[in-house]
Image (cartoon, rainbow, N blue to C red; front, side, top):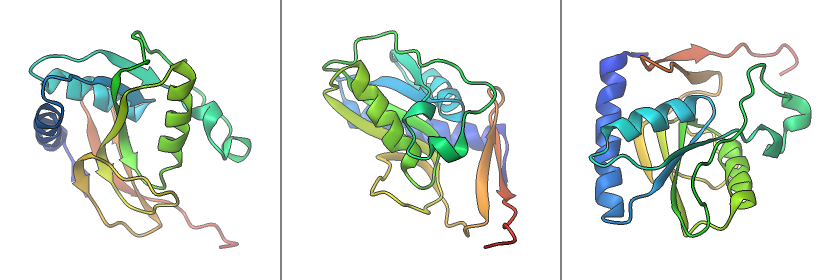
Length: 171
């Protein structure tokens, strides 16, 4: 299964409509989780009638599995060029799977201040939850088996495809 630039663009347009109808006059700040979520947040912001404040988080140090996952090679620092205190935040990620990255991102957000609200927007929701986290806005919901994931490539153009994850011999 693959999504080309036009497919992703259509999902982003639908998500932008949900943002517009869900917030009214209380425009949210978009915070993308690096790297794919930051790409999606930037593209989503471009679809909004009124661009929102835009930031990005690198929640790597806040993950509960940091000791086993380590850091990715290209780690960028978090960038929140607005006041988080009292802000309505729309946290944006590319793929929602277990919920652990979202939990880590929320923990980091609270280090910057106390937002008025945090809602979640994801381009793809593939299930596989380990934590009780669900998106408020979703481009597409998929039911993938445990050995498959969605991989987003970007930052421009954004394209995605389902990939197979090799099963370890001891599993």
